[in-house]
Length: 244
Ligand code: NAD
Image (cartoon, rainbow, N blue to C red; front, top):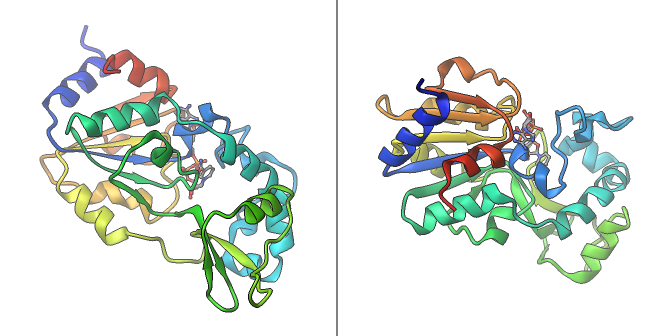
């Protein structure tokens, strides 16, 4: 019998222009919790979407950094998973054109992928909310944030914000991401609940002849639109394709 995995393999073999959209689920095996699973960040007492809203951050950066500190320690030492390494290999082979990621953990970079659109930003830059000065990844910032404390600008003492997109802010590189999706012959979503917009709307820009695949542990609102949906661990599914 022909299984969804067989169909996935076929689509994969045929594809010459793969674009992948990744979410927090590709990094859970690296020890970084996602937001919405039972063991996710929102499962912690007193933590909800509000904490990641820009207005809340401006009013109470202390509350944000207290929760973010321990998470940051995990992200700092996390290593790429099978999925990150798989995608890097696909890029090397010329099959994968672009990775669009919602993740801020930088693991696609750590794995060596080069064409990555980090639509929610990253942690390699820190911006002063007062004087707009920016800092790279400096040890004193890493240490302050790891302790759960607020890093401040050495020039004006303003609050430093990680170069990531909070709720209530514009995403980065959306135009480029839309163009990438439009040119793909296969669009794959890996490890995303597909409830955060505008990323959840990106698969809708695919060409009418392009195929659409979702690999995620849990059902998503776009499952009905996809040509192949497999609910399971993304590392295990990709391992079964046997490319690495
Ligand atoms: P999400 O938490 O909403 O959804 C993650 C999805 O991944 C869930 O549906 C879950 O079932 C699935 N999942 C978890 N582990 C999996 C695995 N091993 N294999 C397959 N699926 C798995 O996350 P999201 O959709 O990426 O978006 C939420 C927002 O959270 C984004 O804005 C993102 O910036 C942010 N976020 C990022 C990180 C990170 O950088 N690693 C971590 C947490 C949240």
